[in-house]
Length: 70
Image (cartoon, rainbow, N blue to C red; front, side, top):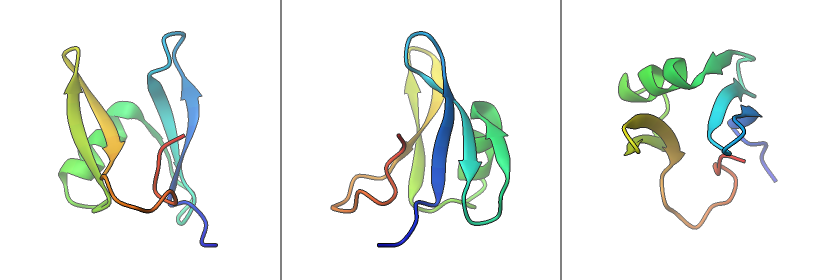
């Protein structure tokens, strides 16, 4: 099985994903940095949702569990 592109490395007390790690290039990102990268088209398997007024990265719905954020 292929390794996941992005892993969550930190969550808030409410469970919101806060920090992310790109397992392919080794970059660590905050939520806002990851959002900007997604919006720039650098992560095509992810998109941004507005959840309670906060831009939040989420994986695109598909049959693969390999790109899920958890």
